[in-house]
Length: 134
Image (cartoon, rainbow, N blue to C red; front, side, top):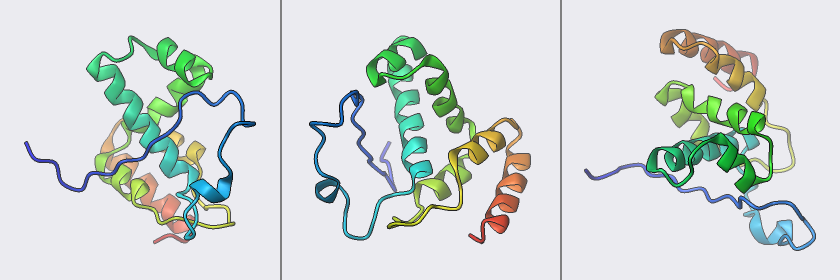
């Protein structure tokens, strides 16, 4: 099956030391960076695919690869529970430069606590309105 509208975002999984990390100017386009919430959601989708494909066995494997706790991996993976249309909106947020983005990961995780997609959509619409994004 042919895929359309494919987004590819790459993340380093071994981030223990920032001393050898490339300079921010080399990795950030002039228009700014994607919002953190966009990058974390993309990571959740990648983790979910790694689990599905059998590249990793469980959250503990992902935690070891990423150098974070299993709890943090669970938090990240929770974003994959969002309704597909909400995920697409978040993935297509425009790059920002030097300002805090009004929607944070924690707010999205709270929405993902609700398993019904209609309720998620209602909460998402309210969050966008409060954040002045709609």
